[in-house]
Amino acid sequence: MQASDDLDYIAELHTHSRYAGACSEKLTLQNMDASALTKGIGIMGTGDFSHPEWFKEIKKSMVPQDNGLFRYAGSDTGTSFILSNEICTIYPKTKGGTAGMFDRSGNVAKIHHGILVPDMETIEQISEALSKFGSLSIDGRPQLSMSAAELVEIVHGINDKSFVFPAHAWTPWFGVFGSMSGFDSIEAAYEDQAKHIHALETGLSADPAMFWRISKLDKYTIISNGDAHSLPKLGREATVFSFDEGKLSYDAIIGAMKNKTIKGTIEFYPEEGKYHYDGHRKCNISLSPDETKRYNGICPVCRKKLTLGVLNRVNSLADREEGFVLKGAPPFVHAIPLNEVIASVSGKGVATAYVTDTYSKLVEKFGTEFNVLLHASVEEIKKLDQKVGEAIENIRHDRVSIKPGYDGVFGVIDVLKTKPAGPAPKTPYGQKTITAF
Image (cartoon, rainbow, N blue to C red; front, top):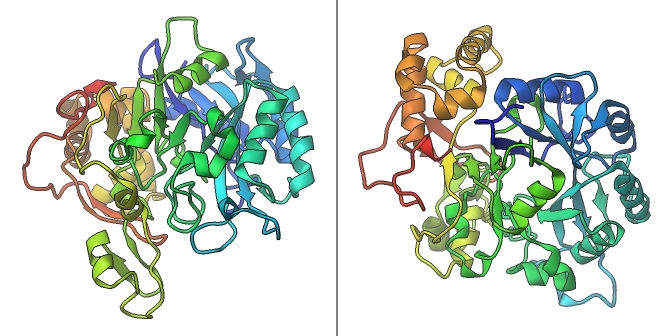
């Protein structure tokens, strides 16, 4: 099995297939299985199980392991697959609808949800039920005319082992707490079905420390996944699980998320996410929340409303100061995909032969991409590539410089230009170094 050690499993639970919008044609189950081996991912979501054509491939290629998980037929990678999907609920504008049916701007509310299930039969029943609310064949991430509460009630009514979580909880248009589509609480969004929500996904523009600032979120497990639209993006965020030998199972994974016993998460730098700051992409305007206040939320160029980012929304709901550490919370570390690190230090594109060759040499030497990023000796990495070693050392100690992303534009990270030395990062386990995992 591919994991950080014999008992630890790096999990990518939120993936997509080539049937999802804006996703690579190379996203096949066989390629995902092979990529998991290279990256060091031990548990991989199938993604898009509600799409009829993709589900045919899942049924054909996935072999049950008698623990609620699956493996790719004929593969010896040891990767365990979990049946997963992402659903977009679009709240219907009905004459008799309540205030909870709409977002704060008066528009119809849209929320993305991750779903995990233990078997094929459950998929068939869920798909049949959801098909009444919209087409499942147009997109691997279907848009369904229903409320969040209806979705959870249907999914749990079919199989109470199913697991639903709000995906990328803070993103402006589709996150449950997003500035454009969200609510101020899980209870408001999921109504009487909030009792079934146990975990929240960070998304690329947030990390667990941002959730810790809001006391009413303390009861939820904070998980991370890459929401990958291509093979190289698999595992750009991930959740780490730890189980006794031989105890890996669907029930164990769900139990860890329900009981807040995950080992931790691997996070994108939230500033690198494309919705961290406020701004207007068309106007090339990027603003911090304080700057947005000075402009009264209006773009200084076009005079239209700014897209308010994740940091702004967190600030608006926070009842704790920045830097607060939630006692007992699972730890987290920041990481940057290895191909992006190599591209950054070399000044070459991520798809160039140089980056691909350097990536292959590092993985061949140290086993997996995550071993390079999290565990390998920096001095040994420097022997193969001095600048890559320096960059990984900076990343492991959160010493990178970042120009924050905004309104759909990814942030820009300089992995060699380090920030001025400051106090050790505040985390549940002291200085944030990669030894946590």
